[in-house]
Amino acid sequence: MIKKLSLLALAATLSSCVAPPCPGCNPPPEIPPPPVIARVTDVSPGAFAYVTHGGNERPAQFGQPIYIGDEFRTGPGTRLTLTYTEGGTVTLEPNVDPKFFQTAKCVVLNFFRGKLAVDASGKCVESQGSRIYQASLVVYEADPNEGTLTVTVLRGRAVTVIPPGIVISEGQTLTLRKGIPLGRPGPAQPQILMRAQSAVPVVVR
Image (spheres, rainbow, N blue to C red):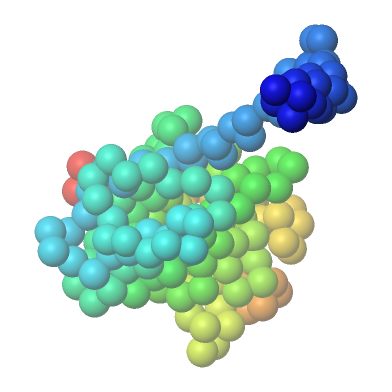
């Protein structure tokens, strides 16, 4: 009986040593998920198109969200179209490997090779040492072997950010090598215009 009372007394003493809950204390807030930048709205059936999010790569699917930092790529014979949440689209031709990142002024689509068309305003595209701020429909083609980026404006205009201040107007094209313009913007030659138009979905031509 004495032993039992001693154990009860010890339990009561230990319970009194436990600090009471902090009045007004709240659990740490949950970190909100990153904002959705775009969604997959068209992908070639059964084609080689993948999106990497959080280090996990999976086949691109209709409606799939795209976040800042996501990487995505297309393979041979693949086309992938993303629709920005704020409006506008980007269409990837085969063998393109872009990703999104955020600057203080712009959501930037960075890619290393291939061709893509961006039909949106207030967006940036970066490749081969050049960055472009665009308004409306612009086609970009990057050649890593030559270190060049060719910018063709089909509608609206584009302005270079790196290097700064070069305006490319509708119907003009400009090629840059590692951030240095190879000449001035000029009328797009027929073959360049045809290559640019081939990257644009029929619905937005």
